[in-house]
Image 1 (cartoon, helix red, strand yellow):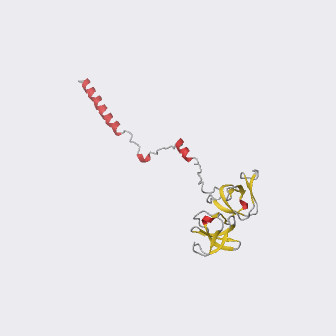
Image 2: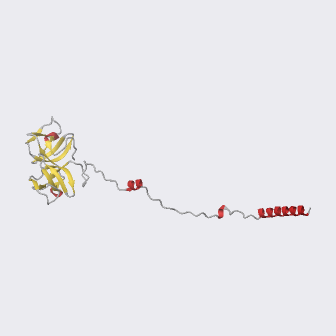
Length: 204
């Protein structure tokens, strides 16, 4: 009987102790008091990103000069009475051709720094220094006895005629006609009778 009473007392003690432990159990810390710690770890750039970031090669338009951004080919005129055309863009290159007619039209086909590769009506030429060239337009008569008229009209009266090889200053061009000055005379001529102006080119 005493043993049973002792067992019951132990059980009662354990129940009371269990209840007491449950009441005094530590309460979880509120989330608002929890300070999360973060750490930023830099990520290495993938090879693909590095490749995209690399400078892409510049693709140039072959129809535009890399120095002046002007169209290629284009026409200019010889500023002086003599111009050396060299094999390459520099004074160290040999002279292949010498232009001797001031005002003659030349066609620029390439550019490099202060040098321009030019050619004449016969295709002769080379690299000349840009200081020898002028933006004043001229043209050479490429037909024998070309007719210059008072108006850009095939029915207009003929003002004068010019032989093959004559050079004149271009005043303006429109609708396949160019107005020129040759030895003080002015007149309109078909663009097809000239070298130094592209067909259909407009010059103002």
